[in-house]
Amino acid sequence: MERRDRLQTNLNTVMEHISSAALRSGRNPQSIHLVTVGKTQSVQAIDAAISAGARIIGENYIQEARQKIESLGHRDVQWHYIGHLQSNKAKYAVRLFDLIHSVDSVKLMAALDHRAGKIDKIQNILLQVNNSGEASKSGVDESAAEEVALHIAQFPNLRLQGLMTMPPFFNAPEKVRPYFTRLRNLRDQLCKLLNQELPHLSMGMSGDFEVAVQEGATLVRVGTAIFGERL
Ligand SMILES: *Cc1c(COP(=O)(O)O)cnc(C)c1O
Image (cartoon, rainbow, N blue to C red; front, top):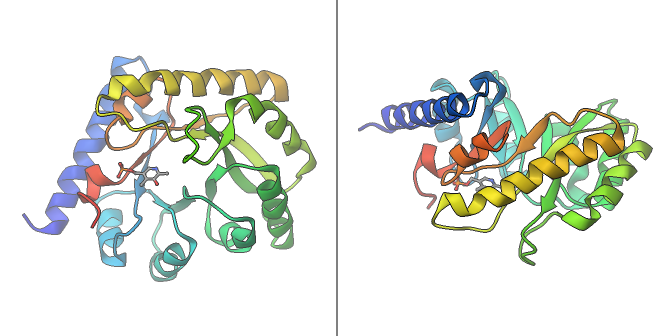
């Protein structure tokens, strides 16, 4: 099959699986947004994915994303940042991205707030939570999430839209379910604490997005199931 056809087929399949998982759990499929993860993929591959119907592109690396957005910024898509972000890249992140999923410290919040203020932008962010306790994963510990989230009030140029997590890897998607449930419960808790809506839960990847949808995901981040294995 031609790459374009394969991409179209894969994207359709993922969207159908999102819809059916949503319907099975009594959710509106429209409340779930597919983030097509483009890391390591070429500009041409991203371009083809957009033509095939991708509406949100997720990127992990600032430099790589800059090149893609320069080439494809005219296309009608949103760009989301999902990789680990260092404070010294905040300036680029606020220029380039509609939503930053991976905010994991007060220091990074302060840097993003400062840089967003300079370009008169209200930057939408998610708080990344490490609810697996794995040292290799970024994100604030579950136990520190309340304290970090409370700092949001001091940053007028940031809008907290919800939470993101990267659970441990399991071959069996069912094993990931408890981590998704915990993220949803934490979100509900923070809504009460902050007295605001936190509409988004960014969770679920190629191997487990259907379980994530059943547990309330509004943003699923899918790469491999769309583009094939990364080189
Ligand atoms: C790479 C990546 C994904 C997509 O993973 P796949 O298994 O290829 O679907 C999702 N989220 C983050 C943060 C990633 O780095």
